[in-house]
Image 1 (tube, rainbow, N blue to C red):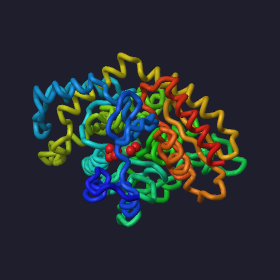
Image 2: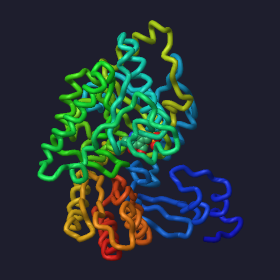
Image 3: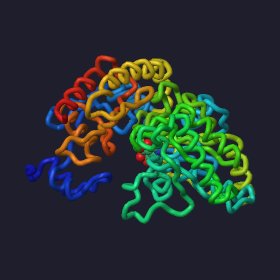
Length: 447
Ligand code: PLP
């Protein structure tokens, strides 16, 4: 595709180094440039409008153009545009937010730590876990287990937790100390004749066997998304979490619930740990915490996690870790306002209601010859296109569907043969109908 020499497209190709992109192909086709957003819609630089059915990157809970968030950011910039939280420094917005998050947590938590992205949060937690094991006089207890197809970020450490091959290829990852266990996707991983409950038992047995093989005293923590997002919207069997937690308790292994996508209403409860009765030691939060108006992340820890870490810092004299922007005042002010809006407008209840409507409409495609599985919970869902048509290679059906939907004015996300939907929490029933109409047309076109 040729672009005018001084166009945005040509300048993007010339100067912008994209991640998550095939750079050679990008140089051929160029960028897709979004210019404006309002509510659940975004508009590109040709003036074409789309339903943003992925809330950006599973993140813009309140949709685009929420003026209260704009005002919260502006006000904070005027009062105190920046301050850090190193040493004994703090600022009012971060103290208020720490208290709010600890209060909101569905299980007893004692402290909130602040970072700038989901990757940084998970990276920091890994370091803190190792620090804690040293503090407890268990220097051998350092290995971490996550799951195949889990997603926890892309830094060297958090990217090693991520269980997707594309995030490791040519990066010399994953690092030692990180192991991956079974992905709880019954539709893909379940054996013939195995019930969902039996499959959940097998997932727990696989975890147990891995712990036994490595030596229970060497395993420090298990990291998992309550519902996997980037791995394909994997909703675990209903008994999965109970069985997994029983194994972790048996060996005194910490549980880190990565709620970066699930947190703040996505699964129809404020946190997915409530949805699945998960009792994590650490909860990771990002994305919807600020509706992604500014980069921000946090994690909450319980006493069991915090106390040894605090004591070790007293012994050493410092916890030598922190990011310049961690707990940024503008992010904290936006997070506080964002959470206030979610609560005032009862958007968690709304997400549960609209989500159930949307998923029931999506389920009507389950019998379509191209569809393998329709899955989801709350306001997150995926359609697995399981029977590729002759012209499209296996593994590319998700992309074919997402490309078609884009033409129809709907932004979705392809993951192998699946196509994911995770719209802003504010979406109305009528707006979800626009997604459903496009999916219907897409299935007909691809058949
Ligand atoms: N954890 C989960 C569950 C995620 O979905 C993501 C990003 O999609 C991350 C961590 C990493 O977050 P970030 O991209 O902000 O580093």
